[in-house]
Length: 76
Image (tube, rainbow, N blue to C red; front, side, top):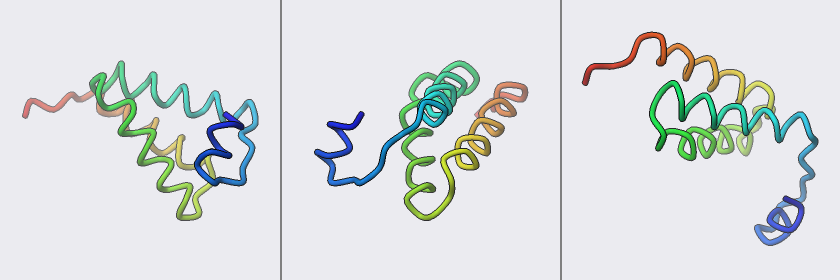
């Protein structure tokens, strides 16, 4: 992750909790919404972090939505 961060010109270190939060979000989006939702959901959470949200709050909000969608899947 450090090499990718450097390549993208980002000055950030992801701690273990943040990595797990993002991976858990990807898993929940893939399993409770649809598989293609995983990368898109984590991307949007990353955009939120880039705009000032904490990783914890962005992943928690997105995870809650993914889990809710899994309980009430859309028919459209």
